[in-house]
Image 1: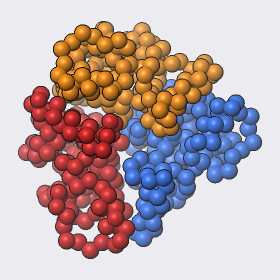
Image 2: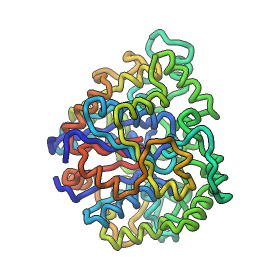
Image 3: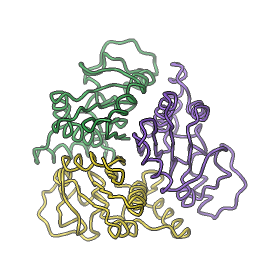
Image 4: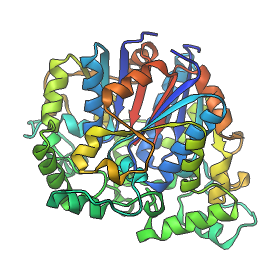
Amino acid sequence: MREDKKTIIVFSGDLDKAMAAFIIANGAAAMGNEVTMFFTFWGLNILRKAKGAKVKKTFLEKLFGWMMPRGPEKLGLSKMNFCGLGPRMMKLMMRQKNVNTLPELIEQARALGVKIIACSMSMDIMGIHPEELIDGIEYAGVASYLGEADEANVNLFIA
Amino acid sequence: MREDKKTIIVFSGDLDKAMAAFIIANGAAAMGNEVTMFFTFWGLNILRKAKGAKVKKTFLEKLFGWMMPRGPEKLGLSKMNFCGLGPRMMKLMMRQKNVNTLPELIEQARALGVKIIACSMSMDIMGIHPEELIDGIEYAGVASYLGEADEANVNLFIA
Amino acid sequence: MREDKKTIIVFSGDLDKAMAAFIIANGAAAMGNEVTMFFTFWGLNILRKAKGAKVKKTFLEKLFGWMMPRGPEKLGLSKMNFCGLGPRMMKLMMRQKNVNTLPELIEQARALGVKIIACSMSMDIMGIHPEELIDGIEYAGVASYLGEADEANVNLFIA
């Protein structure tokens, strides 16, 4: 076990939870930690590109993909979403306080060398193709996560 | 602390989160880890038998028990549930991809020797009796969880 | 790393999840652990005083503050809330079983020396002022959390 390694599973695709995940990840990376984030299930939506890619999908995959938010700008809040009004209010309050937005936090994470991994099994279940996710990320499964978690001293699951 | 021991608290009773819990647990067990899963609050619903048992309950306990899903086949999704349509869609997509269903994942966990513990305190609060849960599991409280977590190197809380 | 130190991030402001957080924290503290709880985002609502304090707020901050529950007596359930009927039912069942209420669990945590920290960044985002939170707590950011988590052997995120 290393004292300077952290992993975070990002299961949720809510704006507020995604922000918490990146704030912890970036803080740890800034303090010299090696940080790995695993995006699984709804968390994959955080990594989606705003524009759909040309990929072959079944009817169900298309429907699922159409109903789920495409990328950090489209995410809802886990509470007080009010059909999108809540996220707008929170973003407005964040701007007034000069707090980084989620896209900025993601950019920062990349600059800090945070490893971003998309869970290949949940991509398969939900019909999400690599072309639809942001570039420069890795793809792996649960064995890979466990290997990293075994080395880390802090492992969080953001449900 | 042992490098080959993991614990997972399953607080949620949502299909998607239950699947994530068992995928991690089974992966770890398959890699030679000793894995303990603690089911508490809504997570107890994952362990419920499909058919109710004959047990004495207060009116409130009956009402609570009647409103909560009985077992893995009846669970909803944490997002996009749409009154049960979401879980059906997800199960259909899982079948098309040959991904294991939740009942299969639970079976697999038992075959791999994953220890399944139901939280006795939340059973008491929610009026769930041992006769209503699947057989061959253990019952314990928070002290027991902490004892196991102290020995493990990865401890997750699936909320 | 110390074998007798635990941290819990309380991101959720739901009654059921708050109870789970304090039951684990108090159990660990009673067994001789040093326990630190970090309250962030909706979790801050658990620490709010029932009565509002006289503080200057922007219109958005006032609106947000007015929509969020003030303190442990006002929290909803993460499932089966039914506009407040669910929490009432659960509290009634807890009283019948002589289980400690959330305000009692919080009192107990303080008596056991559990360290309660409010996340200053999310207070800023949500416009929550120190005067609005219960007395005798600390205020800190992610760096402080990471410092504590590095020393602990169990670190949970309650989303």
